[in-house]
Length: 611
Image: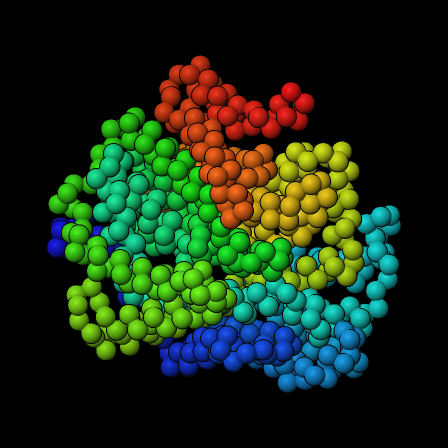
């Protein structure tokens, strides 16, 4: 840990970043960033122009500006990247003519263009995140083209190939659907905002503010990790990125203070996973939710606020129980940052965040326009440092870093969303989504809670193979209608699925945040996972509590009832957390678990039984 004059330091990006960007990559990054910012200020742009150009700008970052040691991979990347960019630009150039075709392919050239687009999307997703999601998308395409050969209710009527290919690639369905629109108009803007913040002193500000607020408490280093990861995760939207960044500071600090390695790694994994559900910036999933539910972004943020607070409260209670058991002390006063340093570094994220909040909630601007204003403020702050100097040379490096990071992150998320859009398009044109909904209703006997458990299991399984946002989109597309038919509001159903899509970050056998944290600290991942599941028990319980206590997500409409529900859920989850972590005797553990379940679900269960 550092002295008072030198605050706890985030790892320098120079220590972890790739070699300096090539000029061509920097130009491509600037084009991508200014294109997306320009769309917000330019005004209304046709979807068949904005969305294909979005794909054209992200493909080079998947196929060209990557480190590949295989000659075949590099050559195929250049060829497929060039073809994909050309096909995307062709669609944008001919947007007016294609709109008049009403989703029908009219020539062999258009068939070839559609095939190039589909292959480019599948391969881009494979290179960005691996095989599972592209395989699911490829299987969905096979079902669309040949599903009429399947006997029984899961077959579908023959679809004209000209209509199917046109709908998926040349019209505002398939890869140019509403999800891609979210990626273009909202997700990209907030990713750029996060990249600009992190290129400056904002990350350092997160760490210093967290250390000042919680460092002195029992288990202080772990509580610093929780606060820092909640703040950082709110803008990163990625549990893995969160672990890799804040974890590089918090985990060694915990180990030096005597924390068992499994606890240090589990705290970071659990806190980092929670960053994706933390308002005001909840990662790509929140903006997709806006599009799919029709609820304004501000409504999503208010609905998600109390569940997210409850989650971190339960983690805090678990940390306190571990601190009592292992006598984990706080951070020494000499190792905490001085108030002056805290105030200076915190301004680097508080000022842009204040602009964002005031613009959205005070002035009524759209989230994306508000984010653009915040980006401009954060970009100006790149000129300055915590040392009080205006350094143009340093600012140049930060701007370059922000552009490259933004381009890479926008491209990875876009590759995921474009691939998921293929699946959503197939579900729509074949009616498969309706059939899966009917299957869920049939298997569950038309009862809500069995349907919820089936959906949760599907989210867990799918989340093990694909990123959280993609798992959420696919699961809610097939299970969401069933849940709403059983009486849930669309927002309840979507938040439930979104939360359970996060389970795979800490739940074996595939738990990405746990793997990264365990590897960084040199601990057995199974020990870390078991500890993380106990600490993160709220991730399993709070989505169910949202259904049992629907007032929890009604903060905007009924704040009193929402706060009362949050208190009840906090007490119930806190009892369960204490029972799992703080008690060593079986009978006392069982007693706390029973009490916690009774507090959480006793009322709704009695009401369901008519008592």
